[in-house]
Image (tube, rainbow, N blue to C red):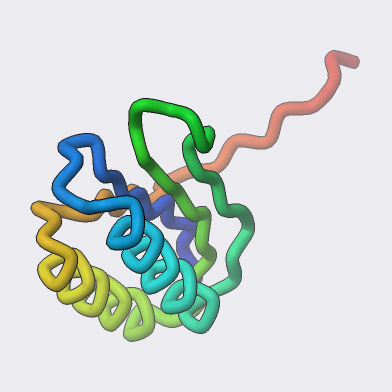
Length: 99
């Protein structure tokens, strides 16, 4: 059974320099490309006061999800981040045009 997960990172506290943020973003993006099916990737505007990024990933293997959670925690720690947001979608509702 698969799961859809939104994974978000940020640097709103400015702990990371621009170069460090770019490395952090790249490390997470590269990891996620090889863990599940990436449905989308978003990042804050270049001139925004906040640096944030979000990925929507579909996992088909529960072990892959567990491994990704563990590895993301390692990447967060390495980059002096307190956390990475992991939001699982429990139910998807498809909306269509009114008949």
